[in-house]
Length: 332
Image: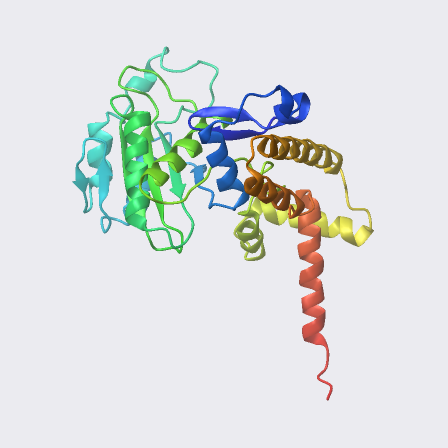
């Protein structure tokens, strides 16, 4: 069975332990847990932390191009870990030199990375910290600044820039992959979970309502960004999703949509619901009736779990229906 975590002020709260053991065997909920439950059931905006893919992270040329991109070729101010605010052309090359990223000679050293590695290791990690549209951009930047100082300060060099050209304010952060002590930063799922929790905590410290829970805990079976990916696929900008759309279209045409994965989603949902119900019982025992009722409503309003294929199939059918409606002749 899967494990679902909620942020507990820096610790990890295992939601499913409530389902397995029962509320009678749990200690009293802490104030941090109660606050987390309240944020989650009232649908407090969730933060996003993303590691961007693509090339350009393992060569100084690519890193320079990325700095040019996030700095809008010198128009935006890039803030560094030592408090500098740099703008204008040449900022990327300055940071590359300052961080000693130009490793053309050092890469010849056999001990720099494994001899069987076909791709050079990353020089930097490219991160995005994003918040809901309408969030004050300066508060987002302040929260990311505090986060970066705590997570990377005096260890990994980093630089950041705020973007406000889209509805949701977001901050691009570039982090040197190898610390000043020679330790490489490896990013895992647990790392991203921790970063989301800490980003949300810093936002709340700046007066911004923010939460960081897993999608399954919230009753979501897919990432909200899938809507944007689907639209990108329609525009031909997402080759992976375009291939998935074509695959689903073929299966729909053949009348044999692959339902694999649905059983696991249903089991995940059953475990999540059991956990929430046990939490509701604990809240009732503690006399927190209003919050217990809110938990009940939250669980009852969860949407039906759907696999990515099922969601895409539904979107394709809706798209086809809209297309047919447009083709209907006008009748008085």
